[in-house]
Length: 267
Image 1 (tube, helix red, strand yellow):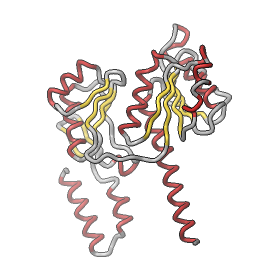
Image 2 (tube, rainbow, N blue to C red):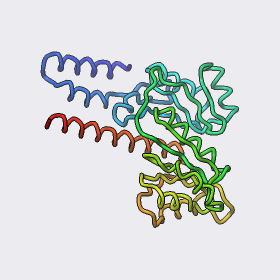
Image 3 (cartoon, rainbow, N blue to C red):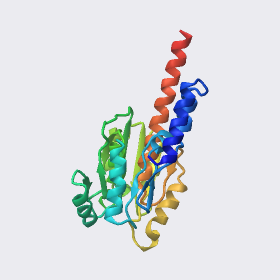
């Protein structure tokens, strides 16, 4: 912890000890204490999970394997999930030489070290993909959600060109949040949202022929969905879809806890 952060924390603790600040107010202030420097190239935000519920993740492209490894090590040392996204196999091999405990999914292109203490959130999340070519983005979403502590079901290759495949697997739609991943024209999200009674997060992929414009066609289809309850993330953003789904599940649980507490108080 940098000196400025250590001093700020000391002052917070002294204020609580002297009765000048409530523990709740101190926690709010602690969420925004400074970050930790890693070399001269990064500032790791260790308090992001306090503010948002999820730790910082490492965006792999544009960073050297050494930089990725150093950031992941700092996150791991603080007991956090150390997760790096869009890591190619050759980059993972170089990271593993520096961090032998690192794990890797070549399909999802995720590299991670699990958190020191596993957590498990209530709620059920399903990830549905239209085609096999969409699997890298779909698995990025599914694995990110699992590593974050959520239960995940997977249903692959049920695009609208063979809609009977989806209809024969309707049990996958029985979830608290659905992530639907599709390229080409991206119609699967609208179909799923018309059948499901939960929020649907649509992820357009860059899969498709020339007129798909690297996912722009699927993005516009999803944004223009006539089915209600569809939210859309950016093209190929499986990671962002997983975090959004997690936030929905966490907020739902928080509301249920407050409701139960209020009911108990009235009783």
